[in-house]
Image (tube, rainbow, N blue to C red; front, side, top):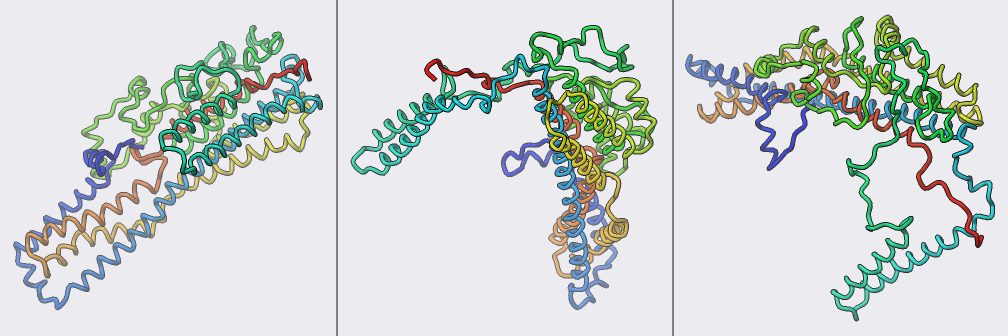
Length: 491
């Protein structure tokens, strides 16, 4: 996907050639303009002038515009639906990871560090008296500020001063603990990272690939089980991340039977670039694109070869939390077809949920509540199959064929329409603009109808996976930082 800034009335977007439908449309308009002058030089316009009115030709052009508008509308719907299905898929599978982590924190291994529950202490209501008073004073402060603003006896400068004092006092009263400033920045990249295993139970081409635990994998036996994410949380994050990565790789047509373009996720790295031209990871992986040749092929509408697709996808691997083992990659290669690969990881995740629930990894949560995890995985799988509609079912051939014929007809017929009534040179300009608009609509529709593979206007799947992984590792954060409390002595 091309990332752009519109600038002054979108002026900056006019200089992007690779991925542009405008310049591809201008190429067709140039051909039509050549025909325009050929008609004129060979005196075809004298024959054309025998037409009593240009309406017959105009009717043909109007029909083409209607057909193009229909195709463009449905192509945009396909592109936007693809965005919707991917975000819904990730939302459901993220629910799986977060919910499993919440259930796991209620298991017995966390009893020594779990925060107290309000339900076990009915006498803690006295602690809320002060907080309720603060809320009441805050409400009174807002009423006082409103009355002050509505008062005609106070000067505007004093109103601003008094209102500022009221709001500042309110912020200090509502703050949870002493702070040096009234606001907190939650988007500071220099803040400490979430808990992440120092030595993750990695699967990438190591002796651990066969599933055996490492010698130091006894994190659950430590005094503080929240010091390092448990193996249960690590395995949950890995399987959910792997499920997403495999699903996305099948949507972009990764080569069948080849090595899975998956690699280990490293938290905190820079986001992948939307535009492959600026992707440092692709350059690091040795991918080089001849920009001039790629632009020419794009302008001529030459499709990428299977080898080019393989090299492009291999240079942009999907990152998986915990990496991927040789056995996992082998099983995925042996699963034939996109649905089979996703179904295999889907099976691994569901089996893991069932096994761990039966052995108490998710506490004493009732089975009907655990069943929601299966529902979440199923919902995500449903949204994945909804995305496969756009990936594997092309725009209907009859309409594509009809539209292509109309475009060729437009290139030939529009010059006739312009030669009937318009001035020679003014007709040239109108011919160029009309053909550019009509063919441009068709080119936009072609770029949008397959949002997963039409480089460079494809969806940023690698960026989606990176966002998903970063959101998924929040399950390692444990309890809320302010969830631990104790009763006051006066209570």
